[in-house]
Image (cartoon, rainbow, N blue to C red; front, top):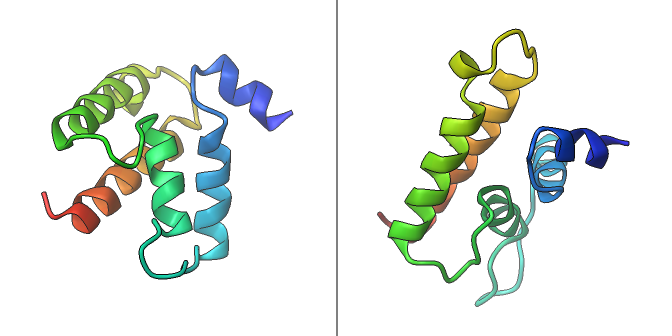
Length: 98
């Protein structure tokens, strides 16, 4: 049911995993692999883990333009969606160093 709601808002189903991962605190993977939290963050932005920084930034801006609370009208979930997108972008930037 939640995946259907996300689809109505034009959000990827992976965003549900990202939100649930935030609630559970994420985790660690073996060395050399992208941590599950970062995998979810890339999924939230809809980009592959090896995407160029410019592509990640474009995806972030596109999603924020679509889901920013100021543009969402009376949608009470807009702030949560925007925060999920912002958090994902921040963690990717920190992990990748840009």
